[in-house]
Image (cartoon, rainbow, N blue to C red; front, side):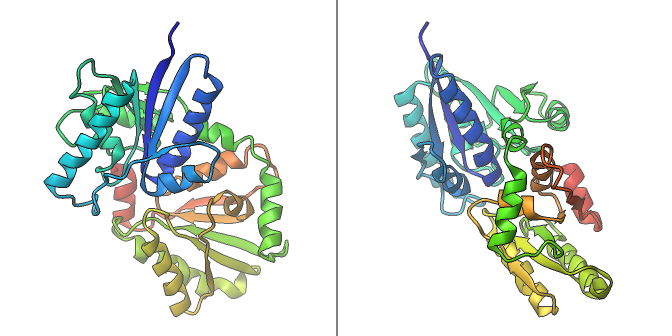
Length: 316
């Protein structure tokens, strides 16, 4: 039986973490499958820190959130050449926030070749799914039941499937207690100091900055009633400016904060005692990370105290 070739792509940070474990699964099934991995943006940085090899997708527009038509055409043409060279049986793209990267270009070009491959998007969140040329992927692979429900409701033109999350399964197998001790020792955090972590997102989310300011005001107002704590802000790798602003705003308000930009967030998550975020999937990541380690007892808190944040969380 001939091997099937899969073409994988990733652009966003969350997608990079997901696609890494897909690639590892395919490597473990090398008797049946071959694959290539194309990545850009934050996903390329994440994959570059692993043992996996990948091909940089360099045709992404300089401003993918607002590209010109010529740049989009050039990107789709680059994707088309990749498909014609590799002739994959399946294109498995990831979810992309900007909607104009290798994921969308490969999905679009996959419909425009002879003997087109099957096209699928791996959903690690509840969309949105974008198209560059009016065609949609044939399949949506949902990593949770909630995401499957979203896909079936909002994307009826695609076939939706529940596949589970390789990433989260892998998180539950990590030595989280050792990771917690390692991080706290490296940063000089004694056991009686609580680590409070805010996972920043992007200014695209209306009310995000105001929500962080609300949190900082509460911590300032009540800090004499709290045990000793240290506040850490984790910027999103795809939109670091918002997280950096949060650190600077906390300092302006008189609240000491540290900006964590370590290559990966998992040691920080393991070391955390209270975890805050507006819409970040890192809160779900923590739950999986803590499954096999009773030492991890942090409380993940979604800060949905502003209506615009609630609307974004429920409607995205």
